[in-house]
Length: 138
Image (cartoon, rainbow, N blue to C red):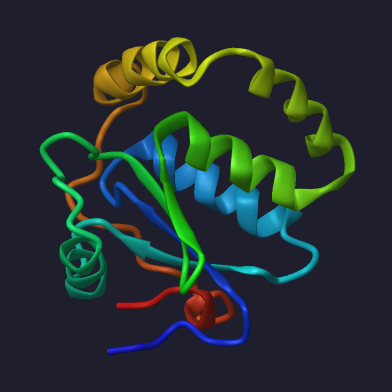
């Protein structure tokens, strides 16, 4: 099992969700500082982290941002922290912090609830290309 080191942040995502997979590909593209690692919620590593953090996957089934020894974020807080970390034009997403978390999470939950219907679902988790494999923990 891999470990998280070097100040990296871990993004746990739904590995069978097409929207989630496309989002991960975009994050990798814009992650110029190479700060993120990835694991699917369905992987053994993902399940261990979720268990260690006592996160109920029946309540949080789409994204978790974990900063070891710092904090973890879920739902809209995770999404905004990821986008804000990317820098550049992504810093414009700071504007969404003005909305209270419950309101942001209503929008987030609506999208998460409908993601399979709108974007589809894979039969299995994404398999990273050889050049991206080092970014994924299994």
